[in-house]
Image 1: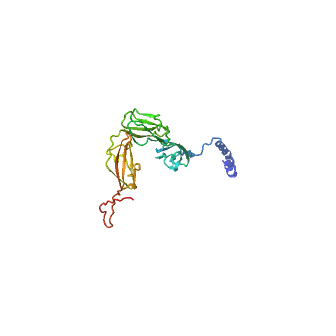
Image 2: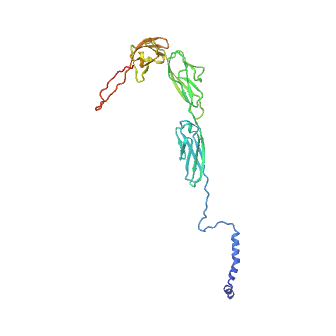
Image 3: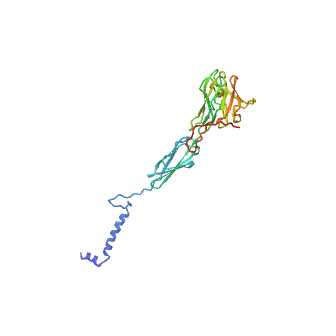
Length: 332
């Protein structure tokens, strides 16, 4: 005991030298083991995860026909919520919706649409989709027509847009198309002796893309005019347009297909002025000749040309509008 006390009292470095080998041993044991982190025995270790890259894909319901609604889609498969979407596209298109729509599309709306997605950590991803928009097909069969029974009719179909060919069809069988119903300006011959209406339909054969086929109809009315009976004197008024076209039903006593007749007007001097009356003939008695184009028969009547202005109401300054008054003017 006295010796130990002497070491502590008389040798101030004696205890340190005694403990130094023990400390070296403990340190060597600690550093010889794998490092497993330092943590409080009562708490789980804290793990830090790096931000995850955003993965996005873009899609659409294209290809489309112009006029349809474009539906864009975006799908996010990686990233941290919440997500912010930013779309851009042709003709100034922008949207912050995840799956935006664009109604009534035009050809100018075709092209590349791009979406950028930003997640809750600030990471972003981008995807694009190309949208095809096609021109609709168009078809025009032409105006309705009245024809003499058995007469041929030269068709004049017109197609446009994305259509390149079309086919004619008739609502009544037995007729023919020369050289074929696939020719736009084919000549149609009705069934022998047929009288009545035939609906002619022109339908495009393409396109094969997103646009549907187009079709249009016209009506051919086959008839044989009856006996011609012209009215007595016909009174014709010139309106604000200062001209009027004389039609067969203005001079005949019955309703007819105007296409089956030809109207010709003559001045008192016998000059042929066609079928249009202008203001220079106001007050003049003209001759009207109506010819049946099927048989060549015709009838003749007279036309008195007048100029009636519409009724004009002239209100007094201190009262309501008085009764209507009519004024007749002659143009010089």
